[in-house]
Image (cartoon, rainbow, N blue to C red):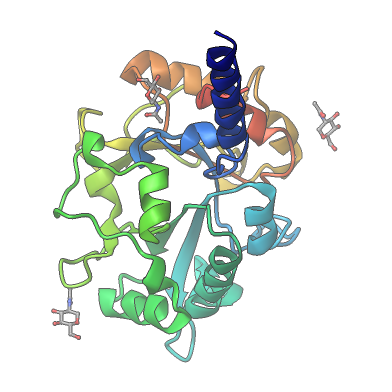
Amino acid sequence: MRSLTTVLSLLCSLYTLSTSAQTACNGHPELCTRQYSNITSIGTHDSAFVGLLPQDNQDVSVPDQLDAGIRFLQAQTHKDFLGTLSLCHTSCLEKDAGPLSSYLSTVKTWLDANPNEVVTILLVNGDNVNISMFDDAYTFSGLKTYAYTPPTSSLALSAWPTLQEMISAGTRLVAFLDTGAAPSVPYILDEFTYFFETPYDTTDPTFPECTINRPPGLTTADGRMYIVNHFLDLDLDGIDIPDDVADNTTNAATGVGSIGAQADVCIGLYGRAPWGVLVDYFDQGDVFTAQNALNGLS
Ligand SMILES: *[C@@H]1O[C@H](CO)[C@@H](O)[C@H](O)[C@H]1NC(C)=O
Ligand SMILES: *[C@@H]1O[C@H](CO)[C@@H](O)[C@H](O)[C@H]1NC(C)=O
Ligand SMILES: *[C@@H]1O[C@H](CO)[C@@H](O)[C@H](O)[C@H]1NC(C)=O
């Protein structure tokens, strides 16, 4: 009897040891067994445009965004005057945050140093360039070595691997492109095969809606993850500029204009949480409380 108790208590302490030593995935052990398609991430809208000018959207660098816990990066590309694919806002005259390959290199360096993290990059192909230019940037930066390639050309929501499976396989980078993806580059995934997006250019600070805005003509949420555009614009006589002063309430977990309130509208419509919520100046407000709540984590 005594030996049985000893064995049991030994098993108990082994169990405690193994769970406490359990590896976290994207900061939370609970996320390891969750499918990629079933996790909500706050994303940095225009992650490369760092500064305080109207054409900027964030105030810390991409590595600092990742260090803070951001796992979903969105960025806009255009060709600069030399023809290099670069992170530019509307045009490279307005804001040029440097070559895409440099941006991707910083993410590669960060993934090298953080082996239990899965990161998603969503790029906008602003000049509608050939997919080969994106392939070149991913290849040159080395980030391609981490890229996840689905086993079939269009993966069902229920077929995505878990974070732990992606980490174990070393495929911890998921690359999406809004237009121009092609089967010739199978690791750069077509955004709108996998997602729909809610409207952007929102100027109503209560964010009252969660309608399907893109892809055009889509009428059902079924089968796709979805991205909520949760950044507020100020309408200045017909010209929209980011409403940065409001970011601390826009990016809140609760209350009017908050992430949680808009996500509730979405969940009411679609029965599941957004996969991604894009915000400006993610560090104003309290985005991670909202993210954890949507993931059922405290
Ligand atoms: C992109 O370029 C490749 C060769 O460089 C070509 O085969 C392909 O058709 C081009 N794709 C588009 C969509 O123009
Ligand atoms: C948000 O920031 C503005 C401008 O700095 C400030 O006036 C306001 O009190 C802040 N609101 C909250 C909820 O922190
Ligand atoms: C993940 O699945 C749970 C359980 O079905 C659901 O409540 C939640 O909204 C899902 N989250 C996402 C991002 O799909």
